[in-house]
Amino acid sequence: INQGALGPRAGTFRVSGEPGRSFVVILPPTATVTTPGGSMTISLFTVGALPGTITGTRDIAVGGTLAVAANQVVGAYNGTYQITATYQ
Image (cartoon, rainbow, N blue to C red; front, side):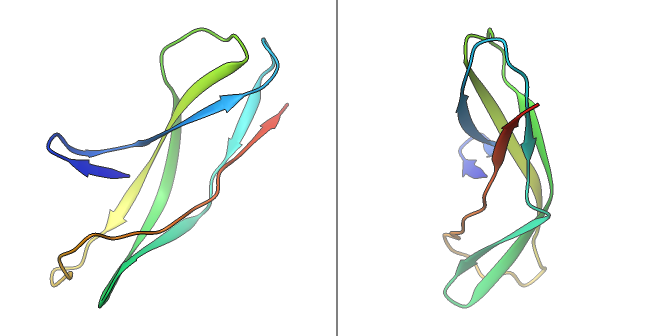
């Protein structure tokens, strides 16, 4: 999840496979991002397909809800989470 001049926005990922095949995306229940002296939890992940044609490659957007405490430490937070795309 990126925070830039335009405000928060979803992360984007490219899924590649066989043309015309459908797939499902499995998201984690939560993820944690950290900075020295602080952490935050991302939950309620969502996924959406971005505009385009199905040619074996599809860009998807993944977002979530970030729990920010009232006294949250200011800084650059880092973390990882896994998403899985599986053919149906």
